[in-house]
Image (cartoon, rainbow, N blue to C red; front, side, top):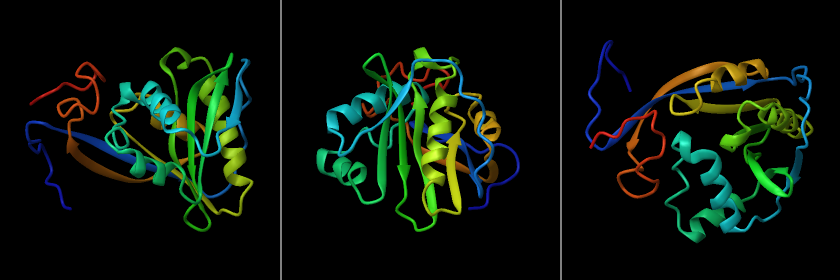
Length: 197
């Protein structure tokens, strides 16, 4: 798709974001783990209620909506699918972070979903989670680990990924229905993205 230079209208009821894809082709030196009582736990065949809860608590503020409208069978096929691994960042017996890795493409690992709940942003929990993500990814037979983020995400997301050793390789524009207008997310989610529609 070729976009013109300058401004382009976004239809009412839609949202648009700049998506940045980042990758690494070797394990970088890991940054020091910050102090904290965090623990990574693998969640084998996660319950759908568990997944929906942590997905919402981590991603609602950043307009994570791709999986909010899925019925049980569609969601189960994605999170229980071959090559998919899920982890929770446990704090005092409660999961406060989500790490979802996709190993379904030979030689690659995609960080499908990565994040911590609002109360742990800025505490070092995300750095701890990223260190574990990279250790797991590079313990497999992969030559590439990649992730994408967008302008709906935390404003420091791209810089965080770059500090973790990723480098940008592609930028795209994503246009989608605003999930706050069709009920997939609450109307007051992601106040940093105005609702127009």
